[in-house]
Amino acid sequence: MSESDPFDEIVDAETTRDPDLAVIEAGSRTLRTQAGPPAGDGIPARPADPEVDKALRTVEQELLGRWPETKLDPSLVRMEALLDLLGDPQRAYPSIHITGTNGKTSTARMIEALLGAFELRTGRYTSPHVQSITERISLNGAPIEAERFIETYEDIKPYIDMTDGQQEHRLSFFEVLTGMAYAAFADAPVDVAVVEVGMGGSWDATNVIEAPVAVITPIALDHTDRLGDTPGEIAVEKSGIIKQDATVILAQQPVDAAQVMLKKAVETDATVAREGMEFGIGSREIAVGGQLLTLRGLGGASSEYTDIFLPLYGAHQAHNAAVALAAVEAFFGVGARQAGMLDIDVVRKAFASVASPGRMEVVRSSPTVVLDAAHNPAGAQAAAAGITEAFSFSRLIGVVGASGDKDVRGLLEAFEPIFAEVVVTQNSTPRAMSADDLAALAVEIFGDERVVVEPRLDDALEAAITLAEEEDEYAGAGVLVTGSVITVGEARLLLGRH
Image 1 (tube, one colour):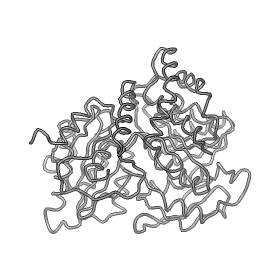
Image 2 (cartoon, one colour):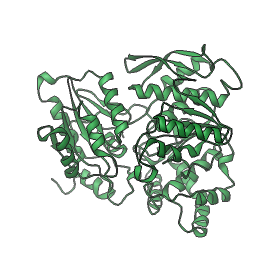
Image 3 (cartoon, helix red, strand yellow):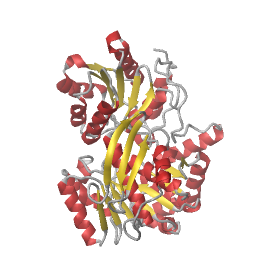
Image 4 (cartoon, helix red, strand yellow):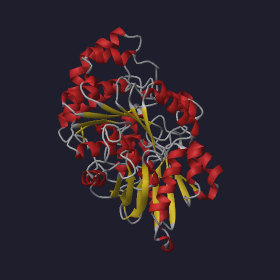
């Protein structure tokens, strides 16, 4: 291997970086897996202007010196202090606040699309990013421009420094980004912000807003070391986003989690709309490029939205769509201040425009390569069901790179029934489980003959595609890359999605 191998340079550059700031450079050696130019998907490339790119890297490096997202302090004191110095920009617009375990980002993107279709200026704050840090802050349906991202940081930096000096701990990476998002939304200005929590709810840095609509996507086991060992325990923390007199849009939940949420709603005089009761999916059919839905809204028995094309795969995305529609209806007062429904043509147009990069995303054909950012057992089960339903693969090869702090055994067990073989690998960040450790787990679950080990992600992708292509009888074989948002983001670039 040559000393100048770009993939090695990528890894060397990334080993000191926070995993959720992994912005992998486009480049690696030539792969047969190159997929051509990307479609419009809301994922920005590195800035073309070298000076802007340099300035963005400087901001990223300054953020890297702070606590990463994986280190938490259960307090809102620092956030409240920063926002007080900034003049409380988060109070300049109403918000829709989203928590849950899986589906938050896709749901946020759907809500953003619906609000934008109704001609509202939107701000969206989501995490983690797939490829570029600027994805996290979106204005009017598009990632914030690099120049504006840098400008926002420079504008609030004096107040960040003041806050740091007044507190026991400096502001974390996620706290600074949250402050930037709220400031950028006020400066834009936006009519409504769509805000996804980073982790949990009560003590999450985003939870300084008084959102009139709180959205709870399905709760499952994840971050158990910080949030609890059962869905009910995790729900206690996540219920913290439910504010006085809010409307709660509650996706289908485990019983213990639903009980916690309903109790919190009673305590706060919040109104609850439950999926499967007050709103939900009327029907669902597989369609070319996605699925065709009938959604039941909050406006009563007659409020059916028919012929909704959603260009995303999997039953879980249909449930996300039902939740997103109910959230936007609640924001507009449908079901509370007014009966009926939203303009169905506008709703259809909005859903047809939705993209969710890295979520059951097809990035290559011949053979088909699908990316999905499933990183816990519940997400893996949804992805496994979705790919089985949407694709007729004669044989499916998995490429898995996971983080060491996740339930990796549960994730692999969810994929075992659908993977003919699995190529285990690792992404370029310190949080990654080593390929050898992942292989040891995989052999226990799949058996030695079904496991291939390729520590480098580019080698893993090439090995999986070779396996998918190697025999004529497997002409309908496919590849699923999964295990981590970071793995998916790096694979996306290696596959030509710059």
